[in-house]
Image (cartoon, rainbow, N blue to C red):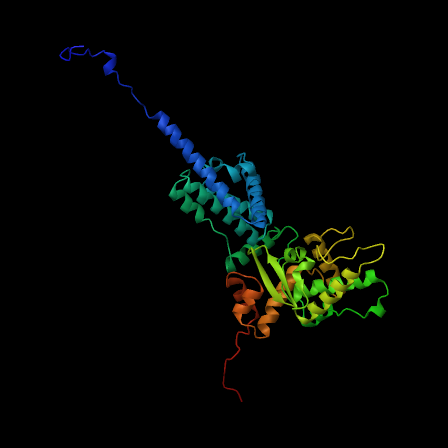
Length: 367
């Protein structure tokens, strides 16, 4: 073609494709959704099993409430799909709080469930599915504590509404030092218990009480112990603390050491025709040789507590006693924090505050 020849306006050489931007907008929306779902997945991967289960229960309760206001959601949708939260408002969260109060849930439980909702709403905001203003409004729907919480419970009591549902205790069962000594009863001489099975059971219970009351282990930590965790030559044992994801070394206190020596020796000996000798595997087992579950340990502690005249004793009550006992005996706060396997100061400080004598050291004029 002659370069001087003009090109027609309709020539294919001049055709221009017109883009509407819909394809980029669609791709951007897809990417945004994928990024949000990834954020949900990463968040949940970082949770412990207990936290994941607790949040599942929180969201299950939220789904029940949403159903009452004609909104259909499942727990799986709320856990995995950010778009399932789109449209969430502070009014809905406030309504959820009032509904939980009317159902008789404990104030602490309500506070935890609101915290779960706020956490997921933050993730939803990060995905730009709700506005910053709405997120701030949702965060303003806070739980109640202190005097306000007590007033809520008093009001519910006047109206005949329960203030706690479920099996969890409202407060720890208080035990005295004398009662703990009775629970940590020494292992009786062999001649007093002729059957090896009886000797083994008594030694097991003594070791269980020692691990709870002298070492402040959580129920799950006791359940996870193996025989290999104990080094009786050094009078030490190791324990995996699932809550903080670390393994700690502890020196065996006197009662626990004696009980461990007796119990491990009996396991090594075995019971002819009933129990094979062993030096490895779960520390505590049931009748079928399987690892004793947390539920079984809780039940056994309740039975032993009842025998000692303590109603409703649980493994966690032992941690409460241990903390108070350690502080009363002059243990520094940082040692209580380390021994109890707390990563923050809040819990040991709470025990210290409750156990403190408010007017200790105050000097006044007296006759």
